[in-house]
Length: 131
Ligand SMILES: [Zn+2]
Image (cartoon, rainbow, N blue to C red; front, side, top):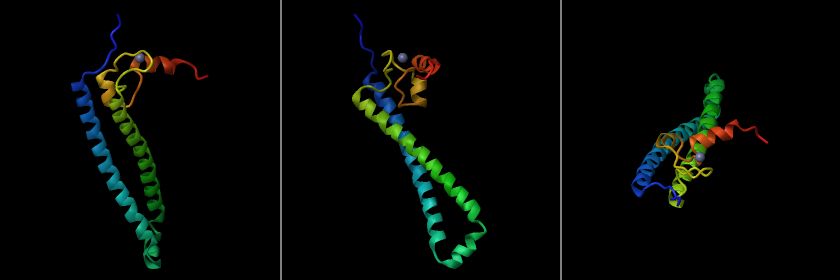
């Protein structure tokens, strides 16, 4: 008889706590960056003199802003993964390999909580040629 593997409630609570902490840190970082980007936007839109004053720095400002947007987009993706892994905890699919049904190692889950394949399956998949 095969017993379905699953995490205990205690372990799930532990992971949930970790993920919530990750989300909190991420949201704080994103809020800070958004605020900074906002300020940059406003300063370039206020009158000609301010604009002229900023002209010399325009190149770097632009570059910094692009970097900030790029970073935000990336963190937004990460946030979605975090939200997804919280859903997976509620659904009972969290930390379980969707390919072989094994539990995924804690180390891996701490790194990528939203993953749905164990290291072995992930490696096997990657080794297969894309069809
Ligand atoms: Zn697997």
